[in-house]
Image 1 (spheres, rainbow, N blue to C red):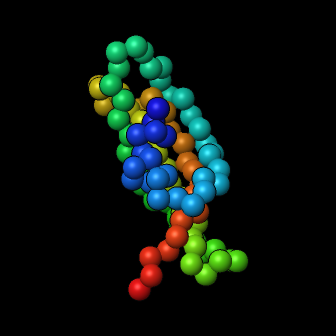
Image 2: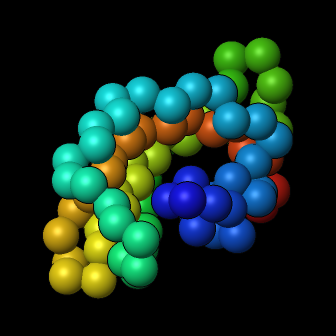
Length: 84
């Protein structure tokens, strides 16, 4: 669910999802909970083989309606670089 909440901002623009890491289920989620997601970029790298692509590492944290974190994970995506 939390990954799905970030598709329009992050994954929808990706060429590929490369990996999901450091997945931590912090607290349980219950029927009726409202879930929110927030993400931040941890690292950016140029692709070694494709000049117009880059790899981005992102941390995403999901929280419930009480602002308690329920899940966190990092992921790496391959994305097209903005041309100048």
